[in-house]
Length: 303
Image (cartoon, rainbow, N blue to C red):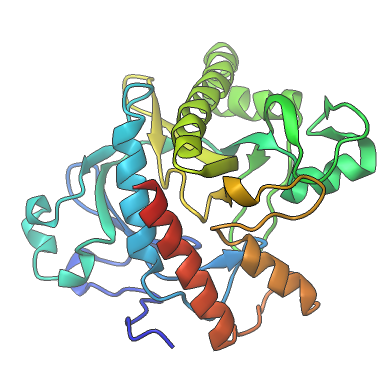
């Protein structure tokens, strides 16, 4: 097993009680600031697993910092600082924050996940096999698993709580959710802007990654609206939790791909027959170590 100590959850009395997501502990600070800390928790099929992946949170944080800077010309994001030395005084006594935390501005998150697909894999492949479409988008017949799609597509979903499953949304259902949250005209505007920005983010990142021998098959982005009604990129960006990374030199359509992400973990859980409902099973040491290695490897290849 790894000698790195794994962080399953955090407790910082001086910072109050955090809101816990599937991976991140969020602390609410003064001046509409949030401390977003990436633990080593890992989820699969929207369920948090009981076994952490040592060092995972630092890997996710490092990749998110890199991509936010690299993609900063496309859209603003909520980052105030990732430098522990510049965190508020109340945070300085908690050295665990270093390397796995971001200080961000609090905004109103949109209740959807913006998923962009360039290749046919995962849930997209499963849905295509049923009706040759994904989220109501009709695709050509005869496509194979892992095929490159004729064009990049936007396939949004709901944002489920832990233990509940995300639901794929048609364009109409996706737009309606944002219209109901933001008002008809502004909601429709934001719905189209999210699609445009998601495509731009994915295309620039995919082009960069391909030059480094990596295919980004798909990725999930999350957005918010700030006090001036501007769209803002939030949360993790192009990490192995939110994306599929495939080695270009081993790419072969018609089968599942080797990958540097948590697809390896999903495949293991499906092989053992888990019903994808809580409680999730403990992970054996071998699976933890292989998952850890994949995350470390993609960080070295990308950053």
